[in-house]
Length: 235
Image (cartoon, rainbow, N blue to C red; front, top):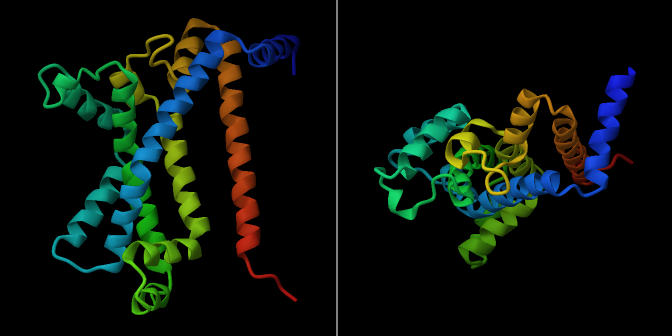
């Protein structure tokens, strides 16, 4: 590593360790918006994934394929749709959420919901249906029966949560279009990295990138531990 790169890395670490207000404001906005979007979307998405996996009804094939299509749509396209919903002439214009954190949360919900539904449906499809049927036969309420199935699938469902969270935490297009990249209000990690890199302020961009790298490492370690506990031990 040359002297210039070392100096940039030292500046980046200094911004994080010194609790630089501008840098940490960006981090807090990013995590609060993404956690909120995930928390709101999680339960309905899991229930829908369960319904698609365990029930047969007219239109199920169409819904499943629509969800898989939305899962692969670029985030900037979803951002455009969210923008049209929230603009003054749009159906949700009266909420005045455009260029606010609430608008960013709505956009990120639209991004992570298809991921959660598709991955949870795949997980529920792979489970032994006898766990659900036994719970229902014993008179357990439907929500307790679903919980018993979820306990069998904790690792795949956690993978779905991590995949959805990673997708919304690192997306740029939707946040830029709906949030507007307003400093201290809607500027999150991906939009700040893009902005600071264009400005030539690489230190802050590196600092924010390090936050994402540390988060990715922590999530992978947790998932690795859960996989290890879930796998049967050989004797």
